[in-house]
Image (cartoon, rainbow, N blue to C red):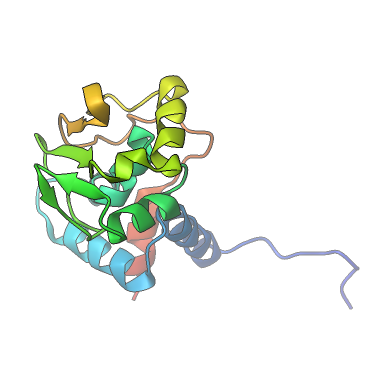
Length: 171
């Protein structure tokens, strides 16, 4: 009989599963989406798959909106994109998973700028530090300067993308 409160040490599989779930919930994506990103990162030759996975997830439109301070959370950013409030290079886009390329200019729909949601974002942007690969211009325009590189962010939590790759390669 085991003593009360005893827990077994976590296995490698358990650690990988928890890391995968942290990535999924952090980026607010489905299992299928993450699986597809892992396959894409794993099949690319010449690069570390973990770093590529990071680049793919960070260059999603909803994530860039969040990083630029237009939204308080990735969920809110996803909703902003889905509801048609965001333009890329002057064209309306409502796909949160859209892979933004360097040089793209992201703007808010002119009529939407008047809403309380975006006025609140202006206040948030004054104090928020944006990553080096994103530039904020006048009128709330956000320009993607380059692809994100793993290690650019100094967050309170660190995600291990190579562990996620290992999890999917177990099968």
